[in-house]
Length: 338
Image (cartoon, rainbow, N blue to C red; front, side, top):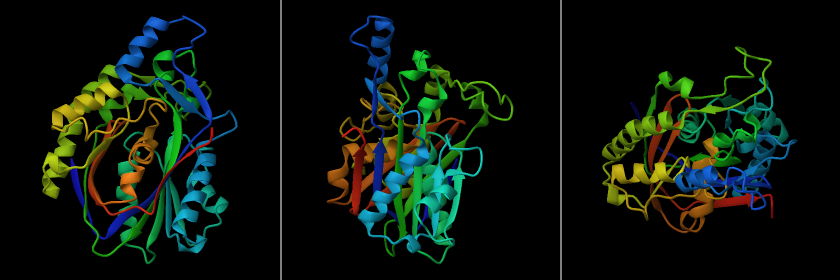
Protein backbone atom coordinates (compact mmCIF):
# COMPACT_ATOMS: atom_id res chain seq x y z
CA UNK A 1 0.00 0.00 0.00
CA UNK A 2 1.06 3.56 -0.71
CA UNK A 3 1.42 6.09 2.09
CA UNK A 4 0.89 9.80 1.47
CA UNK A 5 1.27 12.82 3.74
CA UNK A 6 -0.66 16.03 3.02
CA UNK A 7 0.30 19.28 4.74
CA UNK A 8 -1.56 22.60 5.04
CA UNK A 9 -4.77 21.31 3.40
CA UNK A 10 -8.00 20.56 5.26
CA UNK A 11 -11.73 19.94 4.94
CA UNK A 12 -13.74 22.99 5.97
CA UNK A 13 -17.34 22.06 5.07
CA UNK A 14 -19.60 19.25 3.85
CA UNK A 15 -23.08 19.18 2.31
CA UNK A 16 -24.80 15.89 1.46
CA UNK A 17 -28.01 15.46 -0.54
CA UNK A 18 -30.50 12.59 -0.36
CA UNK A 19 -33.12 12.14 -3.11
CA UNK A 20 -36.78 12.09 -2.12
CA UNK A 21 -37.94 8.61 -3.23
CA UNK A 22 -37.85 5.95 -0.51
CA UNK A 23 -37.73 2.22 -1.25
CA UNK A 24 -38.56 -0.03 1.71
CA UNK A 25 -36.94 -3.45 1.61
CA UNK A 26 -39.96 -5.32 2.97
CA UNK A 27 -43.31 -4.41 1.47
CA UNK A 28 -45.76 -4.60 4.37
CA UNK A 29 -48.58 -5.29 1.92
CA UNK A 30 -46.92 -8.43 0.53
CA UNK A 31 -45.17 -11.49 1.97
CA UNK A 32 -43.28 -12.16 -1.24
CA UNK A 33 -39.66 -13.16 -0.48
CA UNK A 34 -40.15 -11.96 3.10
CA UNK A 35 -37.91 -14.63 4.65
CA UNK A 36 -35.04 -13.90 2.28
CA UNK A 37 -35.43 -10.16 2.77
CA UNK A 38 -35.57 -10.52 6.55
CA UNK A 39 -32.26 -12.38 6.40
CA UNK A 40 -30.70 -9.68 4.19
CA UNK A 41 -31.87 -6.91 6.51
CA UNK A 42 -30.53 -8.75 9.56
CA UNK A 43 -27.04 -9.04 8.06
CA UNK A 44 -26.82 -5.67 6.28
CA UNK A 45 -28.81 -3.43 8.62
CA UNK A 46 -30.38 -1.76 5.57
CA UNK A 47 -34.14 -1.35 6.01
CA UNK A 48 -34.79 1.18 3.24
CA UNK A 49 -32.98 3.17 0.56
CA UNK A 50 -33.28 6.55 -1.12
CA UNK A 51 -33.28 6.57 -4.91
CA UNK A 52 -33.55 9.26 -7.56
CA UNK A 53 -36.57 9.89 -9.71
CA UNK A 54 -36.19 8.70 -13.33
CA UNK A 55 -35.28 12.22 -14.48
CA UNK A 56 -32.68 12.86 -11.76
CA UNK A 57 -28.93 12.24 -11.97
CA UNK A 58 -25.88 12.51 -9.74
CA UNK A 59 -25.10 15.80 -11.49
CA UNK A 60 -28.50 17.22 -10.48
CA UNK A 61 -27.88 16.31 -6.84
CA UNK A 62 -24.35 17.66 -7.14
CA UNK A 63 -25.63 21.07 -8.24
CA UNK A 64 -27.88 21.28 -5.16
CA UNK A 65 -25.05 20.20 -2.84
CA UNK A 66 -22.52 22.63 -4.33
CA UNK A 67 -24.86 25.61 -4.40
CA UNK A 68 -25.64 25.11 -0.73
CA UNK A 69 -21.97 24.58 0.10
CA UNK A 70 -20.90 27.76 -1.68
CA UNK A 71 -23.62 29.76 0.08
CA UNK A 72 -22.82 28.41 3.53
CA UNK A 73 -19.06 28.81 3.08
CA UNK A 74 -19.61 32.30 1.59
CA UNK A 75 -17.29 31.39 -1.27
CA UNK A 76 -17.55 33.36 -4.50
CA UNK A 77 -17.64 31.61 -7.87
CA UNK A 78 -14.24 33.04 -8.75
CA UNK A 79 -12.64 31.61 -5.59
CA UNK A 80 -12.66 27.98 -6.76
CA UNK A 81 -9.44 26.70 -8.30
CA UNK A 82 -10.45 23.07 -8.77
CA UNK A 83 -13.55 20.87 -8.84
CA UNK A 84 -13.38 17.09 -9.10
CA UNK A 85 -16.46 14.87 -9.41
CA UNK A 86 -15.92 11.26 -8.33
CA UNK A 87 -18.69 9.16 -9.88
CA UNK A 88 -19.40 5.96 -11.76
CA UNK A 89 -22.76 7.24 -13.01
CA UNK A 90 -22.05 10.39 -15.04
CA UNK A 91 -24.77 11.96 -17.17
CA UNK A 92 -22.89 11.03 -20.34
CA UNK A 93 -19.80 9.02 -21.34
CA UNK A 94 -18.48 12.49 -22.17
CA UNK A 95 -18.36 15.34 -21.32
CA UNK A 96 -17.88 14.59 -17.64
CA UNK A 97 -20.00 15.78 -14.74
CA UNK A 98 -17.36 18.10 -13.28
CA UNK A 99 -17.05 20.34 -16.31
CA UNK A 100 -20.84 20.57 -16.61
CA UNK A 101 -20.97 21.41 -12.91
CA UNK A 102 -18.38 24.16 -13.40
CA UNK A 103 -20.69 25.75 -15.99
CA UNK A 104 -23.93 25.30 -14.05
CA UNK A 105 -22.40 26.86 -10.93
CA UNK A 106 -21.02 29.78 -12.90
CA UNK A 107 -17.44 29.08 -11.84
CA UNK A 108 -14.53 30.84 -13.52
CA UNK A 109 -13.07 29.45 -16.74
CA UNK A 110 -9.80 29.16 -14.86
CA UNK A 111 -11.35 26.50 -12.60
CA UNK A 112 -9.91 23.07 -13.33
CA UNK A 113 -12.68 20.48 -13.65
CA UNK A 114 -12.62 16.74 -14.34
CA UNK A 115 -14.17 13.42 -13.30
CA UNK A 116 -12.68 10.42 -11.54
CA UNK A 117 -14.23 6.99 -12.10
CA UNK A 118 -14.17 5.35 -8.66
CA UNK A 119 -16.79 3.79 -6.43
CA UNK A 120 -16.80 3.13 -2.72
CA UNK A 121 -13.18 4.18 -2.14
CA UNK A 122 -13.80 7.38 -4.08
CA UNK A 123 -14.16 9.82 -1.20
CA UNK A 124 -10.75 9.00 0.28
CA UNK A 125 -9.05 8.89 -3.14
CA UNK A 126 -10.78 12.10 -4.14
CA UNK A 127 -9.72 13.86 -0.94
CA UNK A 128 -6.12 12.80 -1.57
CA UNK A 129 -6.17 13.88 -5.22
CA UNK A 130 -7.82 17.25 -4.63
CA UNK A 131 -5.40 17.96 -1.77
CA UNK A 132 -2.36 17.06 -3.86
CA UNK A 133 -3.45 19.23 -6.78
CA UNK A 134 -4.60 22.16 -4.67
CA UNK A 135 -1.23 22.31 -2.92
CA UNK A 136 0.39 23.08 -6.29
CA UNK A 137 -2.10 25.70 -7.44
CA UNK A 138 -2.08 29.43 -6.75
CA UNK A 139 -5.64 29.44 -5.42
CA UNK A 140 -6.61 28.12 -2.02
CA UNK A 141 -10.10 26.65 -2.45
CA UNK A 142 -11.43 23.49 -4.12
CA UNK A 143 -14.59 21.37 -4.16
CA UNK A 144 -14.72 17.59 -4.14
CA UNK A 145 -18.04 16.10 -5.26
CA UNK A 146 -18.69 12.39 -4.70
CA UNK A 147 -21.64 10.13 -5.35
CA UNK A 148 -23.63 7.90 -7.64
CA UNK A 149 -27.14 7.06 -8.72
CA UNK A 150 -26.50 3.33 -8.45
CA UNK A 151 -30.25 2.61 -8.57
CA UNK A 152 -30.03 3.25 -12.32
CA UNK A 153 -27.54 0.39 -12.63
CA UNK A 154 -29.79 -2.52 -11.62
CA UNK A 155 -33.38 -3.72 -11.85
CA UNK A 156 -35.54 -3.85 -8.73
CA UNK A 157 -36.19 -7.55 -9.44
CA UNK A 158 -32.53 -8.22 -8.61
CA UNK A 159 -33.32 -8.17 -4.89
CA UNK A 160 -29.86 -9.26 -3.69
CA UNK A 161 -28.43 -6.04 -5.17
CA UNK A 162 -31.48 -3.78 -5.15
CA UNK A 163 -31.96 -4.16 -1.39
CA UNK A 164 -28.49 -2.72 -0.71
CA UNK A 165 -27.76 0.27 -2.92
CA UNK A 166 -29.14 3.79 -2.62
CA UNK A 167 -28.35 7.15 -4.20
CA UNK A 168 -26.71 10.24 -2.72
CA UNK A 169 -24.19 12.96 -3.54
CA UNK A 170 -21.91 14.95 -1.23
CA UNK A 171 -19.91 18.12 -1.82
CA UNK A 172 -16.83 18.81 0.29
CA UNK A 173 -15.08 22.17 0.70
CA UNK A 174 -11.30 21.76 0.79
CA UNK A 175 -8.88 24.62 1.35
CA UNK A 176 -5.33 25.56 2.16
CA UNK A 177 -4.80 26.46 5.79
CA UNK A 178 -1.42 27.08 7.34
CA UNK A 179 -0.55 25.06 10.44
CA UNK A 180 -3.52 22.71 10.19
CA UNK A 181 -2.96 19.08 11.13
CA UNK A 182 -1.33 16.81 8.53
CA UNK A 183 -3.50 14.22 6.78
CA UNK A 184 -2.04 10.71 6.49
CA UNK A 185 -3.32 8.44 3.71
CA UNK A 186 -2.93 4.74 2.97
CA UNK A 187 -4.09 3.74 -0.53
CA UNK A 188 -4.15 0.46 -2.43
CA UNK A 189 -5.58 -1.31 -5.47
CA UNK A 190 -5.92 -4.87 -6.77
CA UNK A 191 -7.53 -5.35 -10.17
CA UNK A 192 -7.97 -9.08 -9.64
CA UNK A 193 -11.19 -8.18 -7.87
CA UNK A 194 -12.78 -6.68 -10.98
CA UNK A 195 -15.06 -9.67 -11.80
CA UNK A 196 -16.63 -9.72 -8.33
CA UNK A 197 -18.15 -6.24 -8.26
CA UNK A 198 -18.87 -5.05 -11.76
CA UNK A 199 -21.30 -3.36 -14.12
CA UNK A 200 -20.55 -5.55 -17.16
CA UNK A 201 -23.02 -3.92 -19.55
CA UNK A 202 -23.40 -0.52 -21.15
CA UNK A 203 -19.73 0.23 -21.77
CA UNK A 204 -17.56 -0.22 -24.86
CA UNK A 205 -17.18 -3.99 -24.28
CA UNK A 206 -20.94 -4.68 -24.26
CA UNK A 207 -22.54 -1.40 -25.30
CA UNK A 208 -26.12 -2.30 -26.17
CA UNK A 209 -27.24 -4.24 -23.11
CA UNK A 210 -29.30 -2.97 -20.18
CA UNK A 211 -27.07 -2.29 -17.14
CA UNK A 212 -27.29 -4.91 -14.39
CA UNK A 213 -24.91 -4.58 -11.47
CA UNK A 214 -23.27 -7.83 -10.30
CA UNK A 215 -21.78 -8.35 -6.86
CA UNK A 216 -20.30 -11.45 -5.23
CA UNK A 217 -20.94 -10.51 -1.62
CA UNK A 218 -18.68 -13.17 -0.14
CA UNK A 219 -15.70 -12.08 -2.25
CA UNK A 220 -16.31 -8.46 -1.22
CA UNK A 221 -16.42 -9.48 2.44
CA UNK A 222 -13.19 -11.51 2.23
CA UNK A 223 -11.33 -8.71 0.41
CA UNK A 224 -12.49 -6.12 2.90
CA UNK A 225 -11.41 -8.08 5.97
CA UNK A 226 -8.05 -8.82 4.33
CA UNK A 227 -7.04 -5.31 3.22
CA UNK A 228 -8.92 -2.66 5.16
CA UNK A 229 -7.58 -3.31 8.69
CA UNK A 230 -4.01 -3.15 7.34
CA UNK A 231 -4.77 0.18 5.66
CA UNK A 232 -6.31 1.63 8.83
CA UNK A 233 -3.41 0.47 10.99
CA UNK A 234 -0.89 1.91 8.53
CA UNK A 235 -2.55 5.33 8.87
CA UNK A 236 -2.62 5.13 12.64
CA UNK A 237 1.01 4.07 12.84
CA UNK A 238 2.21 6.85 10.54
CA UNK A 239 0.12 9.43 12.41
CA UNK A 240 1.35 8.14 15.75
CA UNK A 241 -2.16 7.51 17.05
CA UNK A 242 -3.41 4.56 19.09
CA UNK A 243 -6.83 3.12 18.38
CA UNK A 244 -8.25 4.72 21.53
CA UNK A 245 -7.03 8.16 20.39
CA UNK A 246 -9.66 8.17 17.64
CA UNK A 247 -12.91 9.99 18.32
CA UNK A 248 -14.75 8.33 15.45
CA UNK A 249 -14.04 5.78 12.74
CA UNK A 250 -16.26 6.31 9.70
CA UNK A 251 -15.92 3.60 7.09
CA UNK A 252 -17.72 3.16 3.79
CA UNK A 253 -21.26 2.24 4.77
CA UNK A 254 -21.45 -1.11 2.99
CA UNK A 255 -23.35 -3.15 5.55
CA UNK A 256 -23.67 -3.31 9.31
CA UNK A 257 -22.20 -6.76 9.89
CA UNK A 258 -19.09 -5.91 7.83
CA UNK A 259 -18.45 -2.67 9.71
CA UNK A 260 -18.80 -4.37 13.08
CA UNK A 261 -16.34 -7.08 12.03
CA UNK A 262 -13.85 -4.51 10.75
CA UNK A 263 -14.16 -2.44 13.90
CA UNK A 264 -13.56 -5.51 16.07
CA UNK A 265 -10.57 -6.56 13.99
CA UNK A 266 -8.85 -3.18 14.38
CA UNK A 267 -9.88 -2.79 18.02
CA UNK A 268 -12.38 0.07 17.85
CA UNK A 269 -15.25 0.21 20.32
CA UNK A 270 -18.85 0.22 19.14
CA UNK A 271 -19.08 3.88 20.21
CA UNK A 272 -16.21 4.81 17.89
CA UNK A 273 -17.57 3.06 14.78
CA UNK A 274 -20.30 5.03 13.02
CA UNK A 275 -23.01 2.93 11.38
CA UNK A 276 -25.44 5.05 9.38
CA UNK A 277 -26.94 3.16 6.43
CA UNK A 278 -30.22 1.87 7.93
CA UNK A 279 -32.49 4.19 5.93
CA UNK A 280 -30.23 5.16 3.01
CA UNK A 281 -28.40 1.98 1.96
CA UNK A 282 -24.95 1.71 0.43
CA UNK A 283 -24.44 5.09 -1.26
CA UNK A 284 -21.08 4.38 -2.92
CA UNK A 285 -18.51 7.19 -2.70
CA UNK A 286 -20.97 9.50 -0.91
CA UNK A 287 -21.40 7.18 2.06
CA UNK A 288 -18.60 8.52 4.30
CA UNK A 289 -19.44 12.25 4.02
CA UNK A 290 -23.15 11.36 4.19
CA UNK A 291 -22.52 9.50 7.47
CA UNK A 292 -20.57 12.50 8.78
CA UNK A 293 -23.50 14.79 8.00
CA UNK A 294 -26.23 12.49 9.33
CA UNK A 295 -24.50 11.22 12.49
CA UNK A 296 -21.80 13.70 13.53
CA UNK A 297 -22.86 17.14 12.30
CA UNK A 298 -23.17 18.74 15.73
CA UNK A 299 -19.79 17.43 16.90
CA UNK A 300 -17.97 18.36 13.69
CA UNK A 301 -19.23 21.95 13.76
CA UNK A 302 -18.55 22.60 17.45
CA UNK A 303 -15.24 20.88 18.28
CA UNK A 304 -12.08 19.35 16.89
CA UNK A 305 -12.23 15.61 16.14
CA UNK A 306 -9.69 12.91 15.43
CA UNK A 307 -11.18 10.84 12.62
CA UNK A 308 -10.21 7.68 10.80
CA UNK A 309 -12.02 7.49 7.44
CA UNK A 310 -11.81 4.41 5.22
CA UNK A 311 -13.40 3.56 1.86
CA UNK A 312 -13.23 0.26 -0.03
CA UNK A 313 -14.90 -1.59 -2.86
CA UNK A 314 -15.01 -1.92 -6.63
CA UNK A 315 -11.66 -2.53 -8.23
CA UNK A 316 -10.57 -3.82 -5.72
CA UNK A 317 -9.73 -0.34 -4.45
CA UNK A 318 -9.29 0.91 -0.90
CA UNK A 319 -8.06 3.96 0.96
CA UNK A 320 -7.90 5.27 4.52
CA UNK A 321 -7.03 8.65 5.99
CA UNK A 322 -6.23 9.80 9.51
CA UNK A 323 -7.30 13.41 9.92
CA UNK A 324 -7.58 15.78 12.88
CA UNK A 325 -10.38 18.11 11.81
CA UNK A 326 -10.88 21.56 13.19
CA UNK A 327 -14.46 22.79 13.54
CA UNK A 328 -16.28 22.70 10.20
CA UNK A 329 -18.11 25.77 8.95
CA UNK A 330 -20.97 23.58 7.74
CA UNK A 331 -21.90 19.91 7.96
CA UNK A 332 -25.35 19.74 6.45
CA UNK A 333 -27.72 17.02 5.23
CA UNK A 334 -30.28 18.13 2.64
CA UNK A 335 -33.18 15.66 2.48
CA UNK A 336 -35.23 16.34 -0.64
CA UNK A 337 -38.19 14.42 0.79
CA UNK A 338 -38.71 17.13 3.42
